[in-house]
Amino acid sequence: MGFKAALDSRDPCARYLLAENANPGLRRSSMRIYFSRLGFRMLGINHLCYKLWGLPLQSR
Image (tube, rainbow, N blue to C red; front, side):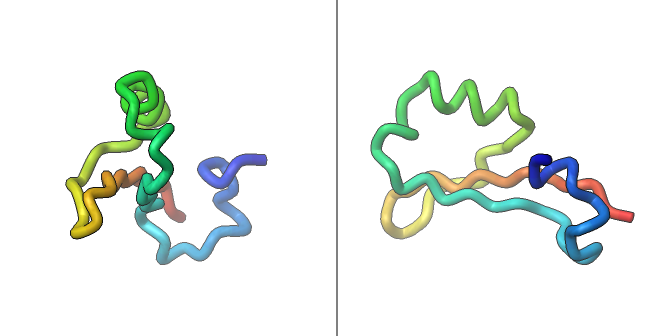
C-alpha cells in the first residue's frame, strides 16, 4: 500500500508530503512531468538549489 492511500496508519495532522530532490537524475524534465502526474506541485528551490515538491494529502 502506498503512503498516499494509507489514511488509517498516517497521523491525521499530516497535510502534505514534502520531497526535496537532491538526486541529479530527478532534475530532468521527464521527472518533473512524472512528479506532476503524481499530484506533486513544485514549491520552489532551497538554498542548496534542490527543488522542493509538495503533495497535498487527504486527512480524516
